[in-house]
Length: 232
Length: 295
Image (cartoon, rainbow over all chains, first blue to last red; front, side, top):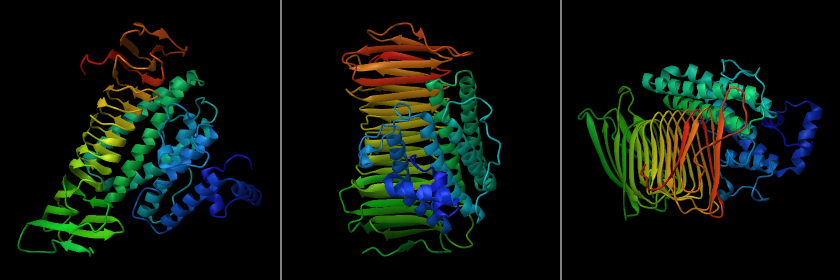
């Protein structure tokens, strides 16, 4: 397998859920790819902590530099060959990296952390597949590379919205109002960007606007979920 | 060696209790405070110890513990004493001590620190004077003001404004539903964005620096220094661009044709053009002005 393993593949590999052929492909890739081995190690650590119902709603902060470094390496924009150091982790979302890859990284991170909160709240595994309604209309044309990122976005938003729904009573009305107001503002921005992208799928400017606002929604939902966790 | 200190155990005598204790650091490099609700005021001194003063109802107790290199302060609830309770902290710490403060409804005021700072609250304002190394501030419903920080600044506000002034280092700042103001900042790497709020910048544009400003539904005001080596690229979709800067085109040009949207852009270069200033708005106006004209 020449491409890097996705987060889903690594998680399925870790849990022994891949079909034999795919399992061997991932195993063979891991033998030669230190980046994916690091991601697997970070994911394994997070899954172990989920099993122990950790107090924190966020995954290891070490995940983010490794995700960003790997994506940067794929895009040819990484700075060093040896991996990230503290000075290598820079925020360049709007400038050098493909928007959908940045979105995918943010979603993967939020997905894992949302899952941790869900497990802590419900005492069980989260449901697979989207549940809540989402503002992004997948029937609209999207630039190449977006499909996977948007699928993961839908899953992440659904998981985090479920956490909020279950834990809504843990937040005071003012907090709920602020969160809903600003999520709506972000949703409006997402809809505007997506409608424009439907007219011009190749627009990098519009792609950046959409990716940034999708990321903002994930970030805000993540913070809201963390607030729910802190109150329960 | 610090053993766990529990202060403010159940007392029927007083409704409000006072805590005033000094904890030696013994090599600890970080202070962590978790307080659900209340005020947190942090000042600094030259002693290798932390003074903890707290005012709290008898439904709450203060627990101070040592975990590795971290002195941890947490607020506990006495059993059967109800759920309400606000605890106000007054901390005096060594200047170089790293700080981590977390809660749901906190008013945080930190002054004089030269360590790393991390503050995370849902409600409440955050005011930081100082901060070195890594500074990370988040509030969902509150105003954030940073003055005199140096290092990697990561600031995120929702429904409240964010102001960063007299600061230096890499800056990442984001606002949703509130304005973002960067004033007298010195940085080679700035990424600032808002949704539904205005964005204002006045600061240095350093050679080789990268400056990225973006809004969705908000205006951008850039006050750029007259002497800079930079390439400025401004793009707006469904908005407008106004320029009053020496050597820059006074009128934008039509950009990429997008059905139903008007894309306008302005590009100009000054000096060697080594820095990159990128500005984007969706539905907002970009103002590019010469610094000194007042923010």
